[in-house]
Image 1: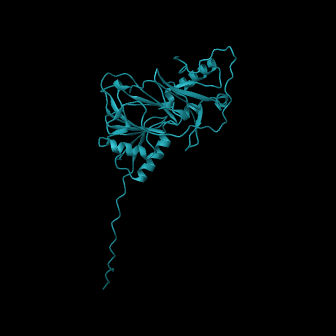
Image 2 (image 1 turned 90 degrees about the vertical axis):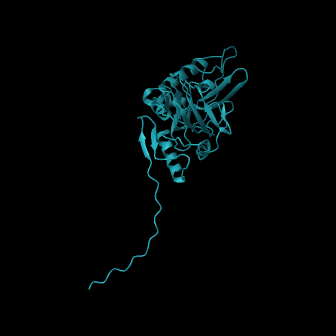
Image 3 (image 1 turned 135 degrees about the horizontal axis):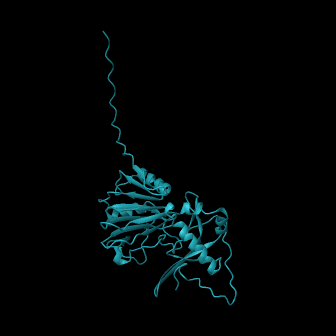
Length: 301
């Protein structure tokens, strides 16, 4: 008679593991869609994975976030760092960290820009929850500024090293803010170089004459906005976008008449830096006319 096998000790049930995130690239230049996650209830491991994906893809989209609460939105931002209270844009009641983005309240940012680059420490990331979307139009585009820098010729890249650009916000007669940042900045996490000038805010390059500055900036603006470096996102209601503000520019396409409303949290940033010493400022002749506060190569004050 064959003896029966000894009884096996009971084993504790293993905790269920969180399902893997569904990550799909949305363009060749940058951007990915992430599904299978509730932004209200992130584990540390999930956040670490999201942070890795942001560094890799630069822009992330999280569809179907109807349950995202204002408190959850702010808490998500705080995982990246201290969140900003915007100096003048309208805020959500009871949540001053959330900026309300609406076309009739100063929210139509229909020119290429980096968020708040006129600050000495611009935001490192922005998190936009689009709640109401038009039936057609109202897309947003982003541009990869790593690629913008890396596709410049080597002599042109060498010329840009050590140059700085002045970024200005000017709303006469009450608001004027400005900051000076490297034209080529180094990402503090990845160590990669990117262009850091923007059509909406950049005034001039103080190491160059005004004419040289206008010419160089206009070339950099047009170069960085090329379709090959961009993605265009068609919004569905309750999609959340997260982007690395240090290495992207974006623009909201102004081609709609219906209501469009979003809520944005931005994460306070670091000071943009370069690994090249700053070149000395241009020294103009005594009788030379020079207009450093003209906002950019197209529009002057």
